[in-house]
Picture (cartoon, helix red, strand yellow):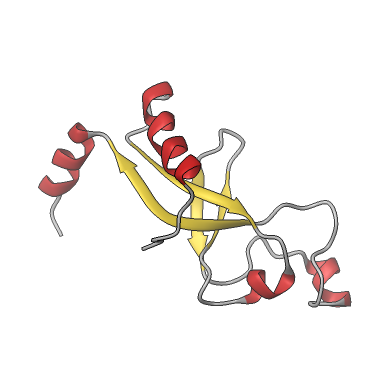
Length: 103
């Protein structure tokens, strides 16, 4: 659902499957401004220390309690927010397993 996804990002999604052993991969980029972070049309994500997506939200996550208490016009320093780019890569075996799962 991102027709203008950068070619380098598409290659990165494929390369993550080649180099790793995850069953799927997806793409994210940094949020550069507060307007984007608070836009409910933009999906944000949080990753763990292994660079794996933990959860997705249209809300601004992770919430910076002290920073946003002062202002929601700028991003607080010292934190990186991620925007999900709607492209996915799957291993064939995973797609077969996924398709066989009950609803």
